[in-house]
Image (cartoon, rainbow, N blue to C red; front, side):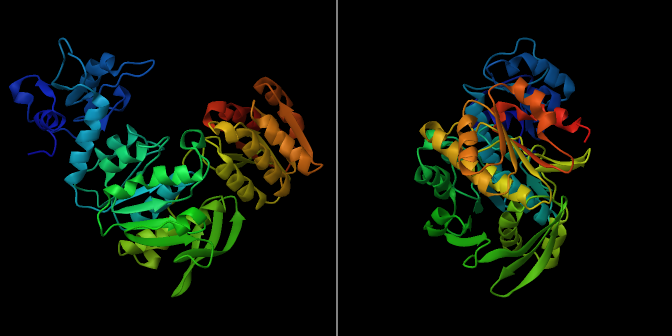
Length: 455
């Protein structure tokens, strides 16, 4: 029998099967919430959103090949079987927890205030040189994305790499109950969602909720360059990674060879080996030793690990870099907090040229926002940013921090249209240009204007 059928889904979710008897035991493989993503045999999950109700697309999903729908209401004249539950969101959590329990493969969970998506891609790239890997696609790391990822597991997969993102206390508890990680990776405790979590200790408490769902033989892999993670005591085995000498595995001799080649050595107390990573961003060298630890824990050789690094590719919107029209453009528009902005500035400063930072608001920093924006401006001034262009209500303090710390060129624009209008005057031939802000600032709109400049 298939691992999932409409009848099994009804049993697990305490739902009601509605459909013909002959369809109770048809195989169901994978789950989606968007009818445009439906593949033959999928479970289509009807979720009510603020603007769109998934129930309206059930018949379209059936026509595309869905084997079954998960709903909160009756579907008159439905074109296939469905399971009716009280809450589809709660049901997919229960279903994915059950489904994950059917697989005995290693499951790696990844969290952190910054760098978790890059860490996920690095770890998946390393492991893919030896294993068939299921990984979180893009940033589907929340209470909807995580169960959809788990429900994509098949018998062909040999390891799963699951990104786990949270906003508030209790979120990790929900995710970890589904994921049940065998290895839990933590990248950094930073200021992401500080408005909800209060302070760095709050961030740490929220993210470490996952340990309650790990077995005694589980392993924690933590960034030992982060003081809170270095000193955090776990009941399970703990291994550390980073750049500093005290870590179990570290990166040394880091060289940004070009915009698409980062070189470094991996070292531990037994020796070292060299890695070529086809990517931009010196921050990746901090994360890479964690991927090495994971590979070694799963029995990989250093040669296999090196081959895996060669397949790494960044996720769109995260430190994507290209040379265009006599300038180097760094698209890091996906999101921003003080830690990630400082990391992006540090990576940019490793490249030759005049460094231009086009920065916007870092949202959801709460009462800390004013000081954190100011401090980020100071950091930019002290770390080789030659010209700063800012936009956003919060970024006035970033601008003030910059001009209070140096005599370099800086401009603040209250309106996005003003920033767009002034971009041509702010950039020059040979510039290295970083574009970064929180996602809500929609700084990706700037990229076409920058790219069209003829220098």
